[in-house]
Image 1 (cartoon, rainbow, N blue to C red):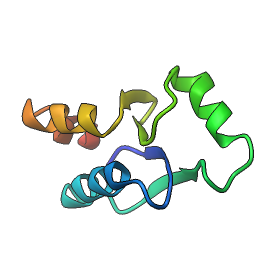
Image 2 (image 1 turned 120 degrees about the vertical axis):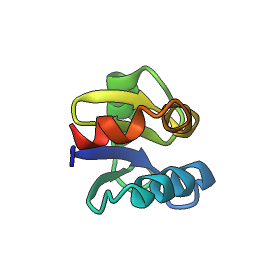
Image 3 (image 1 turned 180 degrees about the horizontal axis):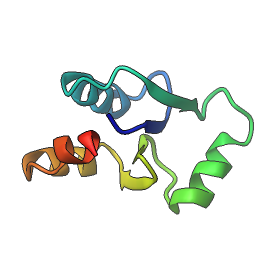
Image 4 (image 1 turned 90 degrees about the vertical axis):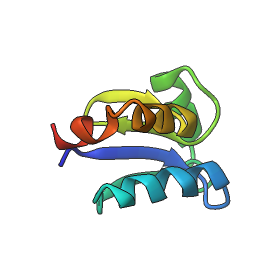
Length: 85
């Protein structure tokens, strides 16, 4: 299973939804970076992704985007192969 890293906050419903989809596919270990708790984490996220909103999700070294992007990969049948790579 590919390593997954996610920038998130505790109360973000999109973060919860993205984590639920990943859990559905057996992703048990997500490297969670809480931008609401870690000083400088949001700036790091913006620098890496060019985006300001959470979640921002990486599968391996690939930035897949936010929750809507993750759901789009799922609809196209591309998420599971990416996770299994």
